[in-house]
Each structure stands twice: as C-alpha cells, then as structure tokens.
Length: 59
Image (cartoon, rainbow, N blue to C red; front, side, top):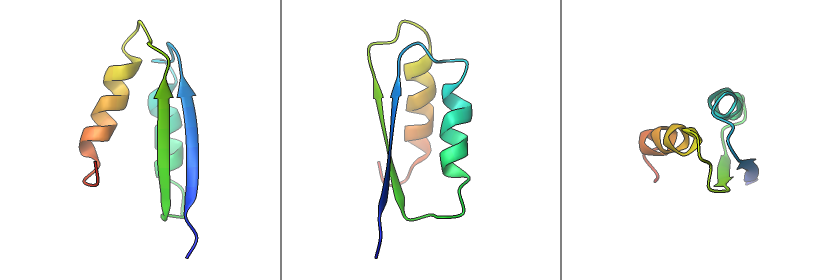
C-alpha cells in the first residue's frame, strides 16, 4: 500500500487556496493525505481551509 502526502503552505492565499485544495481532491489517486499549514493569514484563508477540514469525515 502506498500513501501519498501532499503538503501545502498558505499565507493570505484566499484567492487561490480553494482551487488548490480542489485540485488535490480531484486527483484519480485517492490514498493520500493533505497537510495544510497556514502562517497566520490575515485574510479568510484559514476559514476556507476550515470549511474543507469540516467536510472531511476523518478529521
């Protein structure tokens, strides 16, 4: 079994973070983890990330 880890960093990327997350989620390979680090964004990036996290049944 192979597990792939995607690591994504974010700082004030509200314009792009949703699209970036969707690109990872839409891959045909499904045995992966997505790790997102946010460096204290002052925009709504953290809220967008949290919405995706709340949709994940594993979290």
